[in-house]
Image 1 (tube, rainbow, N blue to C red):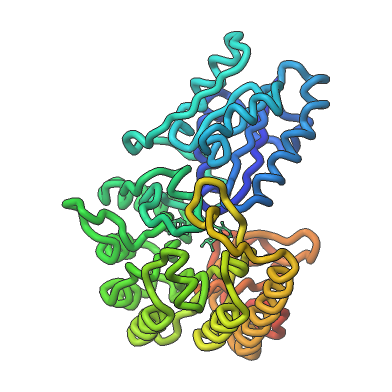
Image 2: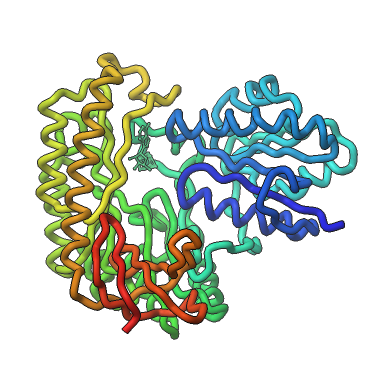
Length: 437
Ligand code: 5AD
Ligand code: SF4
């Protein structure tokens, strides 16, 4: 009988793509994917540790497998990624979940294939974490699961050490792939029919800094110049490195989506300083002004944190004001989560939970009202949507426009992977309802 794998992914887009890399390795070992852990011969948890709730979620799910594993002794359970990469965490995981067979970190994700083979050849358990990042691995064959969208890593790791953030500790120092490898991957994806490429990195703006390679704006232009109809996106940009050259590059080719994710985190200069973000709210607004000068219709999205240590009502009001001033088309909102080992974890004045709760409710309400405002402007207009999938519940196809708005529409035939023009009849919060014209 066929051998099957099931991957559970936590966290960001970077992890979604890492899971595609894991799927590629498992398929090379002869496994095919299945929808549930019960059917699987290999279950992989690709974990995230950016906030405590992502970790708790993984703990809960791994714990639930104990029963299944005792009924199905041959099943291989692997736990990898950011969580075990934290100092001492692999041992904690091993003690807490002795039935887990393989534990690996972020720096040796590419070795999972060997670890599964070791386990198959009778080893009791395989636990390996690399302390440092090592060379970038090229020539992998990720099994892509998001057609017509494809993710391309351009940088790994992060050098910014924002005081709240654990990423630099678990993903290592920033490394950039060579531009020729990135461009070749993009070219081959376009020729395979992918219609939207998203370049990934913790801070794409510092791509190739300090090397003899081309910088990010030139990389964008070169990829956009590849023949064929496709969209190009990128995430994430750090505001301190967002340059006029980049704004010009975005404006230079219509394949580059007029949508930029520019995490601000807070509107208070005091808090931004404590977060080690290296810009003030005025610097940030200046960057938005530069972006809008070259790309006036650019949608801007952001990440926001409430309840950073020492955040006062005044600081929080500054965040609300900045959100209104920028007029984000949407935003991800987070309650600060204390991460052991980061600088902020040692700061006094951790904000009480009830205060965080009140603030996040107020912030989400504001962000939702801005999102609704943006959506309402679409009604009666036609927009180009890239059809990405089918929503079983609604019985409608769905896709996004270049600004990131989700549109739903009916179609007789399967048009996933095609660009369609949709006349917007109704706006429903973040989503638009319409018909193909
Ligand atoms: N607590 C809350 N949010 C965090 N983020 C990163 N670290 C933390 C943390 N400790 C958020 C930031 C970042 C996004 C990916 O996750 O807003 O931009
Ligand atoms: Fe974390 Fe800051 Fe790096 Fe983003 S830029 S990954 S928030 S340290």
